[in-house]
Image (tube, rainbow, N blue to C red; front, side, top):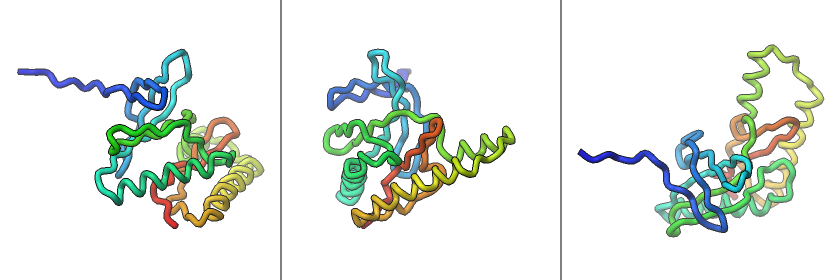
Length: 166
C-alpha cells in the first residue's frame, strides 16, 4: 500500500519561494495559509483562490485590482505579491497580523480589559476611511465584519475584497 504525502507544495513565483507552514483558515472560495518566505524574514500569509470559471476569474482579478487601487490607504492591507500558477491558481501574499478584530474583541472580553473608547473610535474612523475610498472607485465591499479587519498593536487593516461589487 502506498503512502500519500500531506506536504503542501511550495509556492513559487514573482521572485518568491514560499514554504507553506500551515493552513490557517478555509472559506467558501479561499484558503488562508501561513508561509515562510525564507531568508530569515518573518512569517507571511497567503490567500489561495482557484478560478476555474470565467466568473471566478473575474472575481479574483477584481480583488487583485482593488488591492492595487487601495495600496496607499493605511487602513487596507497591502498585497505584496500576486502569484498566478497556470492561469487558474492565484496566491495573494500579505504581511501577517496577530489577530482579526473578532479575536481582539473576544480577548478583551475574556481578559476583562476596559474598552478604550477613543482607540475604538480611531479604529472605526480608519475602517470608514478605507470603505470611503473603495466607494470612491465605485465599489462596495459587501462583507464588512470583525473577521475581515486585522489588528496588530494599534494598527488595523481592512481585508477580503472577494465579495466586492461595482
